[in-house]
Structures are given as C-alpha cells and as structure tokens.
Image (cartoon, rainbow, N blue to C red; front, side, top):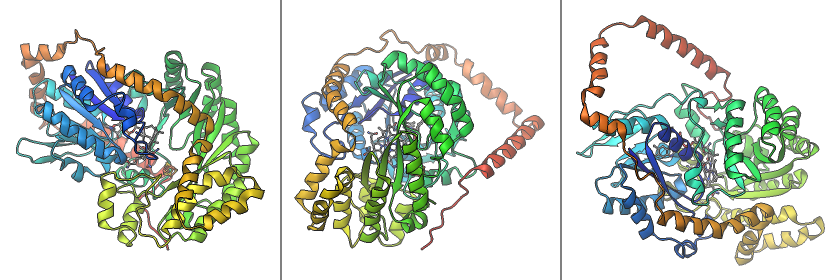
Length: 558
Ligand code: B12
Ligand code: SF4
C-alpha cells in the first residue's frame, strides 16, 4: 500500500519508526516535510518558507504519489497547521482516508476525531496499528475494530477500540528510518536518537504524568539493548556522518547496568561527542563517570523551579536545593557542560518563588540557562489542576487544545504576576551569562514595567543560550529550504512499485479468508496452554509494575 506521511518543523523519531516498520512490511512510504523555519514558536514569519515552497507544491506532490492513506503526526503546537492541510488534502483527494496520530491525538481523542476531515486517529504507538490497518485495506476488509485506533464509519459513528499493550521488546522494531527526513535537509550536523520510550518519572507538567496513568496496568518505560542502539548508530554514522549525537531520551542512562555496557561499546564503535538529559536524582557520580567515559560532552538538566515548595508539592519532583546543587557540582567535576532548564508561570507561584530560580541558578552556575513559560499541555496533571483551581479558564484551555501560542511566548494561566513571568522568563538566559558586577543593571531592568526592552533581551538571548547550536542551525536553514523545494518537486519513489500481496489477494480471495475460518472453528475450544501463558505474563507484568518508580494517581498537596 502507498502511505503518505506529513510532518513539519523537525525530524520525528516516532514517525521514522513507523516508516521503517511499514517499509519492512513491503509498503511504499513517502513523506512531505515542511521546515516551517518562519514559524518556530519564537517568531511568526511564514514568508521565509513561502519564498522556497508553497501549498500548491505540497498538494501536487501528494496527488502525484497517489496515496492509499494519508498519515499525519501531530503534537499540540502543530495541530492548527495539520488541520488546515488535512482540509486541503480532502478537497483534492476526497476518497483517500486520513489518519492522525501522535501525542495530541492520544491526549485529546474525542476532540481530534470530531474534526471532519480526519477519518481515523491512533492513540499511543502506531507501528502495529498502522500495519494492521494497511493489511486490512489491502485485503479490502473492514478496519473499524483495530486496537489503538478510533475509526469513523460511513455513518459518522466512531468505533473506539481498546488499546494494545505497549511494544516490547523495542528491538522487535526495525531501527527508525531517517532517509525521508534527510532528503528534505531535516538532519543537520546533529542527529537525534532515542534508546528508551517513556520516563521513570511523572512530573505533573509533563506528558508522562498523563501517559503513565493511561498505561497504569503496565510499565510504559522500555529501553533498547545497547547492542541495538550501537547497530543503529553505526548505520547513522556511515550514512549521515554527524558531528554530534543527541540522545533525546526523557532521562538518559538512568540504568547503571546498561550504561556499563554502553560506556565501552559507544567509544569503540561510534566515538562521536554526545549530549543527553539527566535529572538531579539520576546525576550520580557513577552515572556521570560512565557518561564521560562514553564520550558525553554536555547534559541538559531540568531544574524547573528554584522554589523547593513548587518543585516538591506541585511538580512532584522530589529534589531539595542541596540535592540540585550537589548534582550540578558532580556534573562539573566530571567536566560536562550543564544546560539548566527552568519554567516560569506555574499556578501558585509568587514572584519570590520565581526569583528563587535566579538565586539557585547563581549557585549552580550552568554553562547555559534555558527558560520557558508553563504551557498547560492537555491532560497533563498540572493543566487539569490549573483548570480545577481557577488558574485556567475553559476558553483558554480550549485555545491550548487547538495549539495556540507556545511555551516561549504564551502565559495561559490567570496569574496575578503575569508580567513577572514574562520578564523573568525573558531575562534568565542573559542573567546567567552576565558578570556579577553588571547584574545590578539587569535587576534595574527587571524592575521596569514589562515592555519592549525585555522582549528585545529575550530575542537577543536566543543565540546566547547555545551559540554553537544557533550558528549551526542558521547555517543549515538555506540548505534545508533548498532541499525541501527540490524534494517537493522531484519524485524519487519506486515508480515500479506494485503491491504484490494486494494483487495476489485480488486474484485469489481465499488466501486471506482461510485463516479466519480456522479461527472461527477454534473459538469454542478451551486453550489451556494460552491461559497458562497469559497468567504467567500477567505475573511478570505485575512484578515489573511494582518495581517501577511511578505507582498511580498523582495527589497534589498544598
Ligand atoms: C524527541 C522529542 C523532540 C525532538 C524531536 C521531535 C520528535 N518528536 O521526534 C525535538 C528536540 C526536535 C523536539 C522538539 C519539540 N518538542 Co518535543 N519531544 C520529544 C520527546 C522527548 C520524545 C518524542 C519521541 O520521539 N518519542 C518516541 C516516539 C516513538 O514516540 P511518539 O513520538 O509519541 O510516537 C509514537 C506515537 O505517538 C505514535 N504516532 C506518532 N505519530 C503518529 C502518526 C500516525 C499516523 C500514527 C498512526 C501514529 C503516530 O506512534 C509513534 C511510534 O510508536 C517528547 C516527550 C516524550 N517522551 O514523548 C517531546 C514532546 C513530544 N515534545 C514536545 C514539544 C512541546 C516540542 C516543541 C514544540 C518544543 C519547542 N521547541 O517549542 C518542539 C516541536 C518541534 C516539532 N516540530 O516537532 C511535547 C509535546 C506536548 C504536546 N502535548 O504536544 C512533548 C510531549 C514533551 C512535553 N513537553 O511533554 N521534541
Ligand atoms: S523527568 Fe522530565 S521527561 Fe520525565 S516526567 Fe519529569 S519532566 Fe517529564
């Protein structure tokens, strides 16, 4: 079958994984990618992209590909452009079904499937559900009962199917296929990879607070074996020759045993400097020493708030100030650069709490401080808390659910100190780089009413946060735009592609009907073996669940 994916803004590891899986099952997959350089959450200048490519080129490419299925992936902040493009695709190809997956559809299934141009949505992992869907489409069978999918039928009724167990082991999937993103120039000198799915923690502002609860009967967190990661990286190194690797795992190398193997294998086979994420509680001496030995040059660490009260009571991050300061000292001792991340504008946060972030940052002295504004991502525990406690109006939550604004620019909560949120968010990166004797000047600017000067300082701070990365990205932009134009105008898919199985099926319909008949007959028999197997599996699952860090519903304490 012919599947056309759409994504914008950056490469997407989840989509790359589905692409690889579908290709391995013999489907023809194509991608339309938009760099959307002018709409990156900081600035909104779509003209930058329009000079190089436009919707007409996108639609023409889609029509030429003749897809059997159009597949969108979306996070909340991309929902609007996805909705708009789906409408255009439906206008020119009304018979081609459209499926939408990703964290947005997973968090807000009712709202997403209600959109008239979407025929199906996928909740959770897409590899197996997509393959089953294509298989059914290929065999001209009904596909309204596929697990993980919600499917609209001809009457408009939505079939809401159960969820599948999470994919385990992750090595049962092929390595993510980056080639379609690469032809659009979406990969630059830094290449991203993930070794896990999920996070051992469940901070209330993060998508994991909601996802861990949806999968509360089983452990969502899974890790690929070192062997499989290294094999993947060897290919990446050979094909894309990156200067740096970014491990995008929510928390990297929290598992000492895994790291002990990785720290030997990575330098032996890969040897490219890398960046990854740690938390104040996982940044232990032994872990950091392992990371350094492996070739790590820098780490991001989420501090989120300088106020211990906000961190522990509201964010469910059990990190005392001392623990954070000690973790930062250890990271520096191991000669790793620190990128510290903060969020301003939490419910209940006072200007004094916010100022504590500046004070704590002064103690940590990171290489770079990155700051964001709290964005109440749908269904996260803290978004729901904000709504319940009057910090977020229903109307504004609806705007968030449509993806308006960004965590760089929008404070959606009704806070008495909104200006302080904007000011303190805008100035932290510069504050971090300013020598002590100049800090009184910044303090004076912070005392001014929020205005242009703070916005200007924020814009100026973007390159300061990570200068090398900023320069690399700016340099990569023209190439990315040119490559996008070229990829949209040239068709390089396999023109001779024939769906062999579909042809076989059409010639001899019994091929796929036979197994069904057998299942029908066996239905009434009691299969003792499979009952025993299911029980054993349940016991293993329960044990895994008990050993996991996160055990159920989040309870907020005042
Ligand atoms: C890696 C990562 C990035 C990377 C790469 C992007 C990517 N998604 O690969 C970078 C650094 C570029 C990035 C950027 C941003 N990110 Co980000 N990112 C992540 C992270 C840590 C992992 C995503 C991932 O690859 N997971 C592993 C894959 C396998 O899972 P998956 O993406 O969910 O995909 C599976 C399913 O969702 C499903 N699926 C996905 N798409 C589709 C499509 C179809 C048709 C089907 C059937 C199924 C399906 O199948 C996939 C495979 O099983 C998540 C946090 C998290 N743990 O999920 C945040 C996260 C996705 N990011 C987030 C955000 C906000 C952003 C930014 C907007 C931040 C910013 N800078 O402004 C940008 C947006 C850039 C962009 N255009 O995508 C939010 C989104 C929240 C929300 N509700 O929308 C998350 C959830 C983090 C958070 N705050 O909680 N991100
Ligand atoms: S540690 Fe990071 S990724 Fe994990 S739940 Fe907390 S904020 Fe989310």
